[in-house]
Image 1 (tube, rainbow, N blue to C red):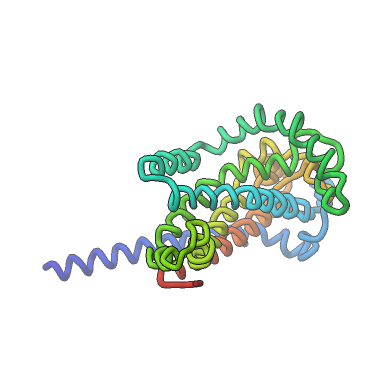
Image 2 (spheres, rainbow, N blue to C red):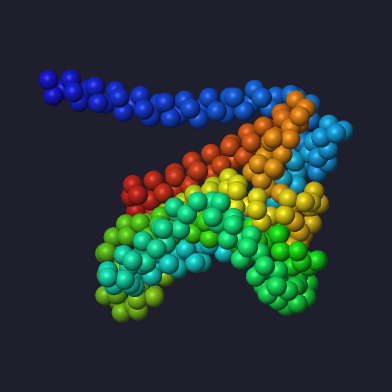
Amino acid sequence: MSGKGDRCFELTAAGAAAAAIATLGALALLLLLYSWPSIARYGLSFFTTTDWDPVAERFGAAHFVYGTVATSIVALLLATPVGVGAALFIGEYAPLRLAEPVSFVVELLAVIPSIVYGLWGFFVLAPFMRGSVEPALRDSVGQVPIVGTLFSGPIVGKDLLVAGVILAIMILPTVTAISREVLRAVPDTQREGMLALGATKWEAIRHAVLPYARGGIAGALGLGLARALGETMAVTMVVGNSSSRITGSLFTPGYTMSSAIANQFTEAAKAIHFAALVEVALVLLLVATIINLFARLLVSRFASGPVGA
């Protein structure tokens, strides 16, 4: 009787897993069908032009892709040192009575609704960036050749940089939590071997722990990047949504793929406009799925056995 119960449970679990995969496949197929008129009409030019004109039925999403990539890279650059540093503090330095509260507070950021982040960004972060941070960046880093291009131009406070900062805060719990678990999975023998040879705490972390955990940490960053790519409401409220120009400056108001969909979906009166927006959604789904799969592969490889040192 117990064997039949185990078999029944196994089939039920397998069916639930298959249903999840089927749902993703059905969603991708549905988006492909609805976006096909745009794919057939514009081809690769859809991703190489920035002319988005619903009246003339000309659609190019290169600036949407650029905005998504730019804000996600900014978010990853800002969240990586903070998230990994917090994970190192929690896992390697903090006593248990302090590590648990800090972990709870960091993970609490993950349950805050996106719209709350957006409102905070709109009323608090954007004015602060416009009045203090961005002028300082323009007057200092902005004077450096080549790199200064990123921090040049007029300051409006609703731009790619502000959107990147919001995304960095939103992906911080993901990066920190997974990095912490990865560091905890490093065998104590790694640390003890270095310490026994006379290494300091930092030397043990640098030469034994981090090389061992690098694959899992890379996976944590990948999962954070996947969330940054698909975030909608918070980004929509602070990214500007007012420019189709692709410039080197992060002070430029722009769009991301998700914010473009959110802003224009209800205004898509023409079938080809609707198809173009669905094509943007399809690309976003595929990119996020690929990054998620790659990141989880890295994490699973780390969890399955030793890598690195």
